[in-house]
Length: 381
Image (cartoon, rainbow, N blue to C red; front, side, top):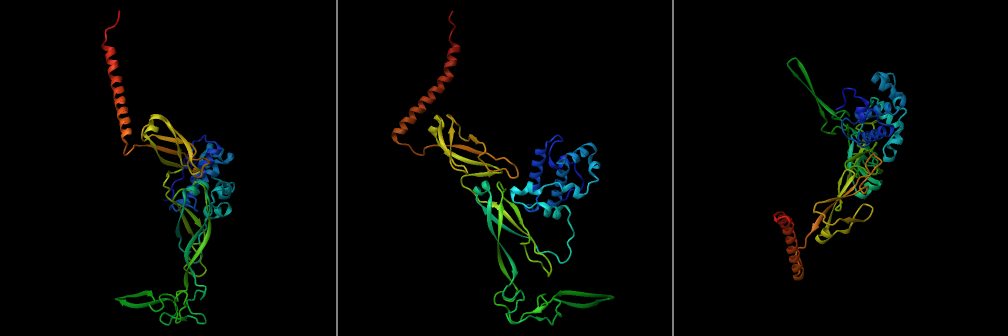
């Protein structure tokens, strides 16, 4: 649902009133990437994006910000949309992430115009899965978008080469049939789809063998899609004009949305920009300490397991996670330690474990009894 009341610009961006230029730009980039029309399918994305862009346009300009701080919305009320938004370099903000920017974005979102003529085709959605390693580096992928299009063999007429469809005599070429009846003083007209031509207005007597007389076949468009580093699973990337065809002549096709999903990786669990890994260590290594190898997206690294580590302890490897989407920083890798116990032991190992158990219990008893004995002993004079 679109915002119904104008909100404070600092509140819109979620920054304090003394925020510096970098904090304002980072907040705008984070929110704008979330509601960018080329990746968001939230119903209020366009309104939220415009609200965010307007707040950034004012707060990123020293003169406009000073007027707003002094007089509120009245201080910037005289600016036209061109005055407000012309200073925003969308290419600088979104360029590293592969989303559209510049004048096209300004025209589409900040100065929308009513669409005239036939309605546009419907949007369609394609799910594309990438490995977790590609989230780290980003890249370019060839994505296949299946969608119907005119049959090239018959030119979309549905008729065999050398023949033409004839006008439907049942509906006169309108594709509709109407019946009229009188109910008292009221004349009722009922309009239905023509059952002979099925609403096409023409009858194909010799169907095209490629499309069976439909006039459309399934096309497989291959488009290049840029995957930005740190992309969140479920992000929808907009591909203009690759959706369903226009329902009528002169119209425009809809858009395609490529929903990028992250393939499961057996080594890691993902939590935003952070990764989680479970490392098993032997009980002796847990007691005495050791060095173990842990996988990262850039290769294995050595991790020190401190002596006496307890099962379930988490070790943090700073900066070994994924890029934080929309921010110039990187998440961490968290390693949860699981102590692996032997399922069976040899006779000699059993003897050693028994000696260790006896020694451990004896030490535990001495640790309790010896202080009590010292307290009970009489002081020497």
